Length: 467
Length: 50
Image (cartoon, rainbow over all chains, first blue to last red):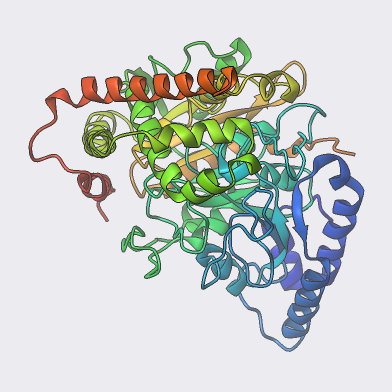
């Protein structure tokens, strides 16, 4: 049963061929068998999930369907506040983060009928792209033991890829949804900044944080996004722009859409098999009627520099208390990254904010005059061996982190919507991943492209042999 | 102060100086009218027409 996609399970529950209790029990059984190796969960709420599933089955029997996710088991990154469950944010402290009200995105999924299985492992304080965690264990890659699961939403990536949950929420400040989606061979959406409320989720950087869905197929992720997106009075940065339905246009072929392959930056130093897979994806989309041409992007390295100043300053402000009072509780690389932010001047922080505004305006005007979407790799190489990248002197680890996330981070600065999805496998059997980047608030177009590519390529049929 | 503490502090100071230098170079020609909130304006202006 855990081989079903989220949307297939939702249909089966609605049709009465599968109960929510059966689906939830199947996930719990799989977690019991596989999570000893994967370490995807920090908190498992088996009793709560089964009780909720039982109540949902009773509702359905009485003719009450809560919504499109009725009875579907999900799990969420352990920085989303869910009443009754602790929120460690990947730290040593079980209740590191609390909120007066439930994470809005989780609440919307729950209102749509979802079951919450528990809270998922993550890089400490969401600071790091590899998925290692000194307090809760390193999340393992479902495709190949010992390789990184990607971070910081590492548990979300591994749990969904291995069939422990049908979908998950992640957060993305510099790639933290797309990197684990890429390493684990699933779909991750970083929506437009402001599209999904951040209320009730621990902030790492107010200016760069995005919440978004992670799932096995584009259709699954699109359904989750449709549910969680939209204005929220509890998040002042959420956009009042109406969210159109995403599902009805998903099956429209991308004929006539103009796609850009970057000439600069995005293929510099990437593994040859990554380049080949992204170029092959472009050819596939071309065969479906899209028009692909190369283009030069406004220098993404500048966006990365701006991201560094903003993210370091804001994360240091948010976590200054633990940094000053209990620094010994933090991992060395996390502490090093936070410490830099304590010393960035207000002048530089404000200049970075002004630069961000100019970069965004220029990028949107220049690039989207030429194309409707951009294609780029999500990770520069297949998931590396954890022991080779996450160990050693902290400053060296921090440099490796920057290199691994250099293809995702620029789009956090300029706030554009991005979907990351599988585009092949390396010779060693690890997933490769494509980013499709669109205009602000145009999630519909990138999801349509992603769905068309996914259906044509068929990569989503391949599942990890996590057992 | 121990030797590792001192080396660590130099590393942090070096990283901060590098960030400051980069921002100084990039921000040299910012328009007077530019302000951080223009970011949200740019996103809204760049959205597809309904």
